[in-house]
Length: 408
Image (cartoon, rainbow, N blue to C red; front, side):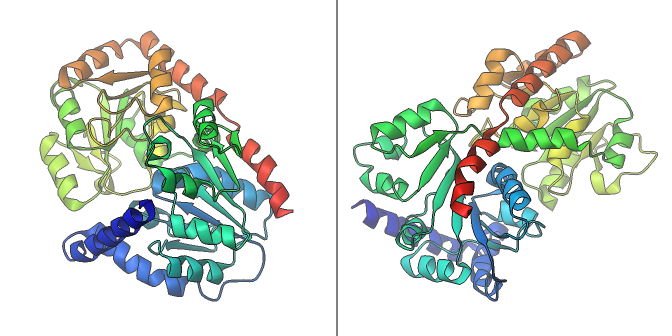
């Protein structure tokens, strides 16, 4: 029954993409990208090949330290990088450490067999929550080692329900699972899955590398001009409502940089209407006197946080909090919505330490920003956030120590 529900769900999802593509840009990108993937993976170079699959941009950032470590140990290795979502593919389609970057074709027995037979990987790595039945089953049948990296398992997930037998069967296709915490390992052991190592989250290694890169952004430095700076990243409309009054009426001599989660012309224009005197990043000039900068392109948020004294990270008023480790690693205290952040371990950890503060809305945000005007309070919270991130590094080394034996 579980398999039947899975197949029917995929059929409805794929049909939905086809129906939505004339009206929805992301659906059209996904539909066209899947079709083009087949021609993109033909005529590959011969040699050692690893397939890395990520859902979207956030999962790519988790997979990136592993890709870099693999290439460091085996420079001759060819990496096939696949994405499920346009928000990942469109930003990283030119990633220089990958031989090919493509959309993953829809999960079906025929697609899985044809795709894997074309790329012929010696190893496959799926990042975090990617559990595609037909692809994983065929990898197992073909004797190709496959690993799950930075996965995390919580009570209430279908794997641990009485009716989750089919999903548990999917997990048994992995040769090894590298999970983020002991709770995940314990829950998997309770359903008979013991080929598990607690490695931690590779995102800590990724943001640690950002800190060490010392990469500067001339235009942003010119805009900030030494002022206290708030960077509001991955914002949604609910997040904008929370920060709007402070930015427009109370921010005084602060500089404000806003990077929306959805970068499109409609959102950018709406933000320019919302925030008085807001300037687009692409219109920035050497002598600009604006206090509010709207980021109108993708792929630069992780570097923007280097210029922040305080960060607001969006998403928690909606489906879920976005990446708070990127600002935290720079010694930046983090603010986010108080609705949907508790399933993110780093958010609850930083809240308990005092490096992050959830807010219920506009009034809460204004109150905490008044506190952050006090330099000592602000720097203490930022130091707590940074120390936490740097202490959590090391997941990539644990993973590499295990999987390198398969490559050798």
